[in-house]
Amino acid sequence: MPSLAWPALIAGAGALACTTATAQSGSAGLETSWRVGASSRWLVRGIPLSRDGTAVSFAGADLYAQGWSLGALYGRLETQAHESAGAVGLRAAKEWTLDGRWAVTAQLRHNSYPGAPSLQRWCYNEAGLSLADADRWVLSWSAETRRGPGCNQHQGPAVVSRSLELNASWPLASGWHLGGGAGWRLYGGGDGYLFGQAGAGWQQDHLALQLDRVMVDPAARPLYGVSTNNSWVASLVWSF
Image 1 (tube, rainbow, N blue to C red):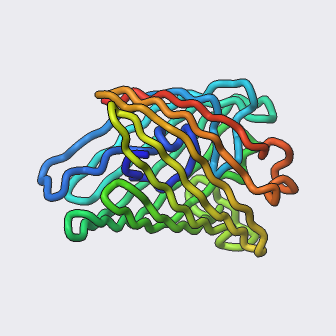
Image 2: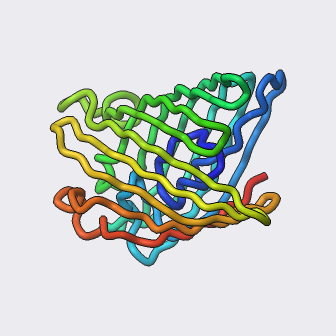
């Protein structure tokens, strides 16, 4: 996987849809990144939110300036409840580079799904930290709440879940790479599950292709049903 400006939010689609190149250290100007793409599934930390057999489309943009960045992502998907929904992702982040190799990033992120009552519990405002080593691996931690702008849940625990994730990439020849990752999501009540992905991708100029095998701990099934079965996810992204 390329450098994760957003910690791994969506396996498969998000490994590309929520991925951007890190801004050049020390640049005094404003840099931009744009992308459009499609995927066979929309997953959030291993859990599929889109219905089997339906495609997902998305577009995103990021702005960078002197270690600061802002990003937005919008997607369209059909939920497992047969709703046609939008997927909105917003983020703000600050990156510090250490010794030209290590990077520490702090960020705030919002994710919501307008038009999909069945996905209301997936509306989050999130704070996170990540540590990256020369674009080869990224370790990230985040805490999520359903309170605040866009979600407006006023009851229940302030922090509904926490996640710890590790993603890595191994470059090969001719634009190919291998990638993998694992994560642990813990709910406020103490329940949680493991998830991960392994796959390969190809990137040349502005085009990127990715194929992942996504795996989810059976402990997630009492909460999310048989949709948590392991699955293949294919994605295509055009950046400019």
